[in-house]
Image 1 (cartoon, rainbow, N blue to C red):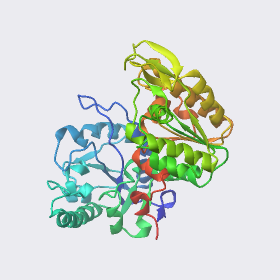
Image 2: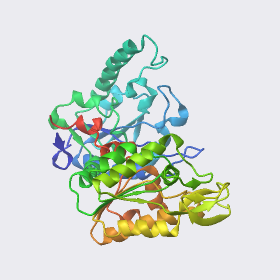
Image 3: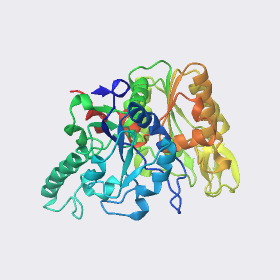
Image 4: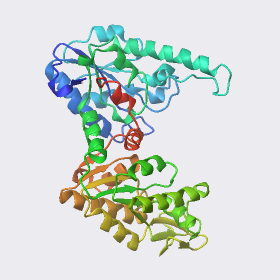
Length: 417
C-alpha cells in the first residue's frame, strides 16, 4: 500500500472514494458540509501535485434505482466552492469513460450516485433470502459487482479511499475496486489515515486509566463494543436510555422509561462480567424524569430505579453526572459513543454536556479523546466543543465495527498482504 503523503500525483488520474452523503434540506441545500470539508486535504494534495480528480460517492439509500432527490448533482456547486475550481459532472457513474479520458491535470469530475446501481452494494434485488434461487442470484450479483468495480477502476491510474464512513462495507467502490490497482497505486486518504490511527490509539496504544462512555437508547446495539471493551477499559460508563434496562434488570421501577425487556438477562450478564474483569462499571443512579416526551414537559429528579408511573427518564441526574466526571477527568484514554439523554431537547442536555466538558478537561490534562457516532458528534458540535477533544470521528458504523475488533473491508482492501 502506498502512502498518500509520499505519492506524486503529477499527470495521474486519481479516482477517490469520498463520503459526500451530506444532509440536504427539502430544497436540496446542504445543511452540514462537514464531510466535504473533511476530504479537502486529500483532494487538494492530488490537485496540488498536478493530478486530476474523479470523485465518487453514494448519497442516501436509493436501493439500486435512479432517484433525482438523491442525485449528487445537487452538491456539485458546493464541492466546486470548497475546492476553488469548476467541477464537471458525469450523470451516469458507469458510463463516464469519455469524461474521465478527457480530464486534464487540475480538473475535477464528480460521478453520479454510485448506489443508483445495485452492483455498488452487491446485493441481489427483487428476491428474498428464503427463495431457493437466492444463492445463485447472490453469486451472479457478485460477478456483476466485480464488473462494475472494474469499470470504475478503468477511469483512473490510482485509487484513493478516503471514505471511512463506508469502510465497514464491502462495496464495489470501497473494497472490490482495489483489486484492479497495483499495490503502489492504491492508498488511504488523509482522513482515512487519521481515523485508523485514532482507533489504534484507543485499542492498541492505551494510556491508562482508559474510560469508555457508551450512551444511547439500546443495549443491544452496543453489545459487541461493550464486550470488546471489557478486556481493555478501566472504567465503563453506560448511560442514556440503556440506563433503564439495567435499572429494571436489577429490580427497579422505571415508570414509562425506554427499556429493552428482552435484554434484562444481558444487562445482568454485563454487570457480572464487569465484576469478574475488575472493570469499574458506572451506571446512572438518578435521572431527570419527565411526564411526557417533550422539551416542555414537567420534570423532576428521582432515582433511576424508582421512577413514578407516567414519568420517563430523559437525562442523567446530578449524582450520575458527578459519578461520570469522577471516571472521566482522571482518564488518559477516552472513548465516547452515545449521549446521556435526549440532548435534542434543550431542557435535557445537562448529562451529555457534562460528559463533553469532562472529556475536554481530561484532554487539556493530556488525555487522548475520541468522540464518534452521529449523536455524540452532534453533541460536541452543539456545545461548540468539537475542537477541544483529540479526535472527532466521521464514521458511525465503521467506527463501531472497528472498536468491536472487526476488520474493515475498505481498509483491508488497500493494505499490503
